[in-house]
Image (cartoon, rainbow, N blue to C red; front, side, top):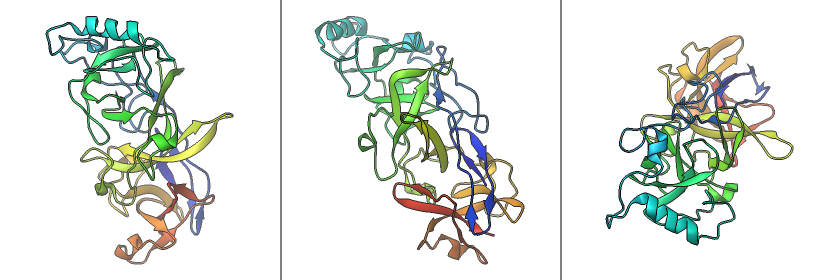
Length: 296
């Protein structure tokens, strides 16, 4: 089977069960606002980039941190300085989760000038789950623009939308080192029904894995990705070529996009004549639901 992972991973799906698990990398950030390793398929964040976009005035991310004037004419720099001077946050000058140290209309985010530490930034658009973004200031307080959409900062799974959201996506700098405190939620989308929500319009819900915990262990998650054109039955080499609600998988030596299904009682395969829902071994379970594909 081939399924996405914060990148794409190759595994083999045998008739009756599947072996292997997905794997992948953290979301990469770069100080100049470009993406990390590239598009889906090379170990990057599912929709391609790391921390995205220019500042609200079209400049780079260092300009995005504190641009413009406040509602009463005061500079955002002065407002930020006043907030920082008065805060008692455990992380200075501000903390990502829980949000601390920045006074509205500012929010705490990664310091995009060097990707070291935190800084207060403007919120020019209150993007949340399901929102696309083209600059750091296009996400609400407590969110970061990564991979072209807003991701929520978190510290536990309970901080994330349920039942499928997990506090599992670590933001890293351009050298691959984790940025302290910059962990975000995976999407609460449904890989068997992408249109049900949880991702920006036009994106699909795909399967991914990340490493987390001490010692690190692989964890299956779902997250948003750009869909391909391949419907059920289309030939594929990576999941990036498969449409929403399908997964690139190999059954009986045939690698195809196949309809995602839920086990044991889901009826998704009823719409695909001659198929049954084939599971994985070990089971692929996210948010308490086991998933497979309609095979053969």
